[in-house]
Structure formats: structure tokens, C-alpha cells
Image (cartoon, rainbow over all chains, first blue to last red; front, side, top):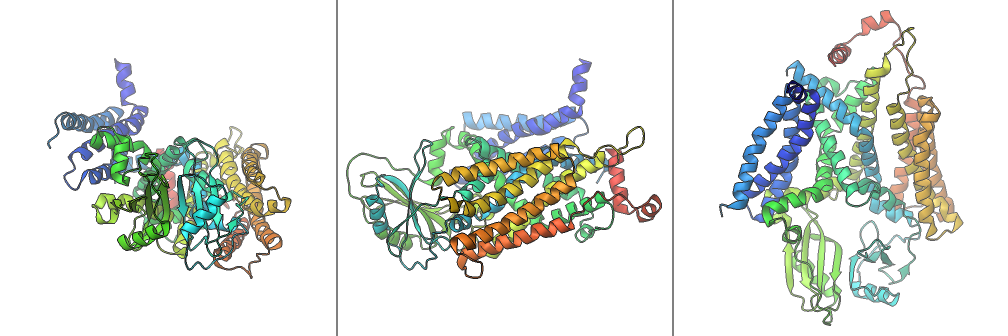
Length: 97
Length: 527
């Protein structure tokens, strides 16, 4: 258990959180923003998602990498991923419009 | 900013550069010829007449092509442009078989011989796809762009004394300080352009990868439906004969319906088919968009779709501006030159970054007996071989595109050019691992590149009679570009030190310690 904890706290874990966790969060957030974007037609929503994808990715990467420990980096990613995925699921299953 | 944040950003900046630096150099350096691909393509075909095109008869051009055996119903027409005054009619098969291209002189309707050289395409494809299978090469280029973007972001935050760094270059001091100053100077001056190139390049490279994600959100994962929503409908071939209307008439119609399009391509899908379409696409004349298009039915002439991104929302406008911003499809030749110089600065930035990283980790290390450790780190050798080798291979293939004309190789010239390019590059990647004097090798590469560019000009004059002082139009511009690049190579050869300059003496150094050096040392000790 302690070994796992140590691994999660490590710099490698922080880097993985930034690279992989950041990318997964970005995908979830991009889908969410595309689904809920209130302005313009469907094509505008797609391009809003497409533009934000790169901004989210860069921002989340640095948010994770600047965390003091690996565990904190993963927590930061999860704090974005869980609400984004919940929103995605809600919007895909029962869209507002 | 907290020191720990600064340190993390500093390390991230360094590691991103080290991991992606060589790939980034390949993409950035090959971006320079890619920026001038149309112009290079025009220059490499020495038989291209310099034309002043008044009027283009596209129907006549198509009939000429058909008389030459061009019997495709799906094809592109590239009308004569300001750079290349010829009409191109091309069919690109869906499999990997070669394209069927007919080149026609619009003034007299004559079919021109196909260019034997493929140098421009070779260099352009390296930039867009790294000559890797589609779409993996494109994705890799996109990831390199993303790495560049991340490195730039960290670079902005760690260089807080930017006002001072804008003008600071201390060439007489240590090798490490020279590299540091050069890295910061190049980075700061080229920042707006590198930021634009990195952001737009990342979007262009990774668009294919994120399209399914966006399609999931908006079209239940149906990518073709999403593509159709963005780019317009595609023709449904019915196999039912219906004579197509005149292409010239469609051109007039397009000019009337969308007068602000600078038409670049005409795509005909299903010639003489009831369901056939003709699609005009090009750039907006006054706004940043290369996604302007209008589609008609070939048989009836009815308008099917009108795609104008400049009339849409802000995000559609951003996407429409990506390609014009990346390939300078706006402004004039001078702006292209500025982009090319910025790309060159970015190349210097990448190389100096790699060297700086190595210098900070291995530059001052000593063995147990206090002798200096060998300076030849494998990463340094790989950087020199790959980056310097690419420069030499590029100039070699540019020279070969003209020199090989002596041997009348016909279509085989393309294979010879490719063999020369890859052979030179691979040979020079290996060379630093065999010959360990990196400084001498750098000078050799600079001189070789400069000489090859001068050989290009000489060969162009002797073989094609296109001497610099007789040339005009884009041929003259390209030749001037080669001459200036050759001079730049010789200048760099002159300026780059021949040996690694150590600090003069301990006492002298003590007096010359600056805040900058102190900063570097602090960061090193922290690292």
C-alpha cells in the first residue's frame, strides 16, 4: 500500500498525470464544451470545441505539472474529469434540446 | 513567482525541448521550403514560361487534356496563378498510384512537358507528413507543434527579464553565455511568429485526430456527416449521362455569386453525370480564410452549397484563418520572407536550446583526475547530424534538381533526387558519431550548404540559361533567396567559433559574473 502511495506521489506520476491525465481531461472537456456551447450553429459548436481543445490541453498539462506531488496532480485532473464526464453523459443521454 | 514554480517551468521547458527538439527542427526547417512550395515548384521546372495571363479558357484546356488521353470524370483544375502561369488538370487516384497531371500553357493551349524534378514536393511533404504513412506523420507533426506550444508557454514565464534580454548578446564571453543569450534573443524576437506557427501547426496536424471527438459530441460519431456539415455535400454519381455545362460559364457565375473569392482550385466530381458537382474553392480576397467555397450542379448549373467562413461565428473564423496564418496566404512576398526568417530563428532556437541543455549538464563536468570529460554526448552528435545534415541534404537536393538535368534522366530524376536527399541526410547523421570534432563538422556543413546553393545558381545559369541578372518574376526571387541563403551560411561559418571558448581565467571570470550567470547557476544548483 505504501509502495503504491509512494509511486502515486512521485515525479513520474506527476508527469503521467500531466501527459495522459491532461489529455483524457481535455477530451472530456472538449466534448462537454461542444455539447453545451450556447452560441451559433452545430458547426460553430464543433469549432469552439476544436479551438478549446488545445487551450485546455496546454492549461491542464501545466496545472498538473505544477502540482507539488503526483497525488495532487491526479486529484487536480480528477476534479476536472469527473464533472466533465458527468456532463458529457448527461448531455449525450438526455440532451437539453 | 515562487522559486519552485519557476524551477518546474524551467525544467519542463528544458525537457520538452530535449525530447522533441530534433523532431521540431525537422518540422520547422522543412517549413521554410514548404512555405515557398509553389514558388519552388515553378522554379524547378526550367521549361515553365513566364506568362502574363490575360484570360484562361478552361474548357479549351480540358479538351486539350482529353485529347492527350485524360479521360477521368473526377479531377481538379488549378487555374493559372500569379506565381505559376500554367493551368494544371490533375486526377489523384484513391489508391497509391501516381497522379495523372496535364500542364497547359493558357496563352496558346499547348501541353507542356511534365517537370522531371519533384524537389519541392519532397521538401513540402517532409514538413506536412515527415514522409511517414498518412495520417501518422501528420499526427506526429501535430504533436511536435503541441510540444513547441508548451515549450513557448513555459519559456514566456521563465524569462521574466525580457526587456533586458531583448538586446543582450555577449559574444566575447563564455560559450555557455553566448548560447544562453542567443537562445533568449532568438526566442524573444521571433515569439509572435513562433507562437502563430506552433498554434496553427498543431491545429493542422491534429485536426484529423480530434475530428472524431468533435463528431461524437455533435453528430453521434458520424465523421462524414460532420465533414459534410463543414465542407458541404459531395456528389452522388448516378451513372446517368447528362452533359455538363461550360466550365468557363461556371467561372463567370462563381465570380458573380462570390466576388470575394480568389479562386485556387476547381474540383469536378462526375463530369457529364447527372449527379455531378463542380466546386470552386479558394481564399477570401480581404479576410483571413482559405475555406471559401461554392458548389454547383454540373448538369443544371444550380447552386448546391455556399461555404463562407468569414460570415460565420468567431470559432469558424479562427479555423478558417489557420491555414492562411500558417502558410502566409495573405500579405505579400515580404511577409513570407519574414515568416521564413522567423522559422530560421526558431531553428536556431531549437539547436541552441539543445546545446545549452547539454552544456549545463556536461559542459563543466570533470573526471576524478580533474581532466575534463569528453564533450561529445550522443545527443549533441545526433542534434548536429540530424539538424546540420538536413540543411546540407536540402541544399543538395535543390542543387540536384538543376544539375541532374544534364543527364536527361526523365522521370527517373525524381528517384535520383530522393536517393541523394535521404543518402546525404543519413550519411551526415552517422558522421558525427564517427568523426568527433563537432566544431569542424559544423563548419563543414555550413560551407557545404553555402557552396551547394552557389552551385544551384551556377547550374541554373549554365544549363537553363537563367542567369540571375537575366531572370524575372518568381524565378529571380528564388535565385535571390538562394544567394542570400548561401551568404548566410558563409556568414555563420565565419561567426561560429572554431573551438569551445573556455572562460579566460578564474580571476577575470570572478569580476565578470553577472546576475544572469548567477541566475543560471542558481537554477543549475536547484536542478
